[in-house]
Image 1 (cartoon, helix red, strand yellow):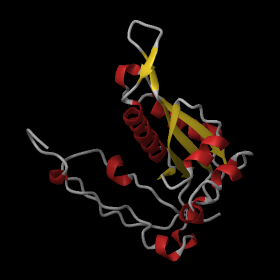
Image 2: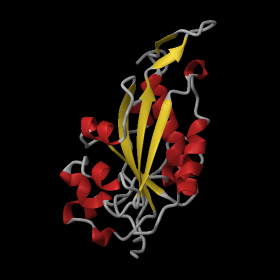
Image 3: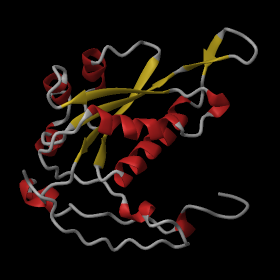
Length: 200
């Protein structure tokens, strides 16, 4: 089992916030510890309570633990640069959004223009709960979505948004050289570059 290597976190908030927001980051180095289904479900329980337009709750999750029969096929959909580090994660979670929602006062379903936005909020809740529980998550956009959708039997009215690795942080020495140099909390743009009063 590899142990987490120390990292320097130089993140500083521009305004007062809870420390959990600057402490959470997305490592690539994982130990080979087993991740239980219950541990992942705790993260997804937090995601369940994310804000939702019209309470449509479009987020959907497919959990694949490292010893599950779908692991090899889902892992194979990752781009080679992601396969280089993701293999020690204890779980892969596929995050999708349901494209439809119930029309107010009617049983009819209509397109939900907020399905991707709301699912992003659920991912944020999941990531924060993972951090609070002592786990690390890393979102992955570099994978073959069509192949992953087939592995996971994704319904046609769902959009596969991303995959996420779940695990305990490990030793950065296990990473390829180029990734080892990046294994630390990254910076953020100043708030002044992102938010203005009265206009964009």
